[in-house]
Length: 158
Image 1: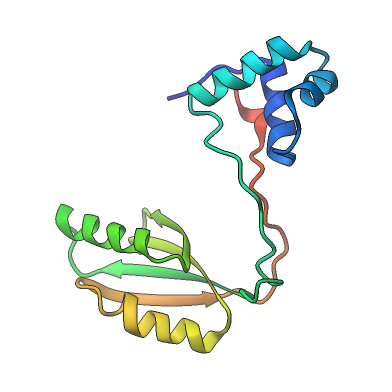
Image 2: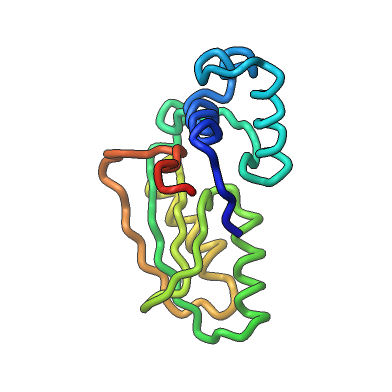
């Protein structure tokens, strides 16, 4: 469902996604509104689900999670129950930080973070490959991170 955003809404969202610690008063000052209308806009966007939450972005390398793997998964059969079972399993693994259903040769793309390759191998062998209906898993190990952001390109939002 698409939501129409005013230029002020986009400015507010841009500020929030770059620094969720900003107060409504600080945001209001930066976008040229008084505090109450700014707070109402933020509240409306939260109620509409445009703002899903406020989170701290952690430094994974400083937390000893330096390995990022993008794993392509292909299932052997695609019944509704098989897909749901796989997706439910992915929800339970904190190592899987993102999971996407794909169109094309593979069924899923997983982003997995781990301390090292050895622990990734153990995770794949003991968790992923033991799931039913796994036909193939191909691992693509990131060598370096060029860009990683949670900020969306708001200039395309209407």
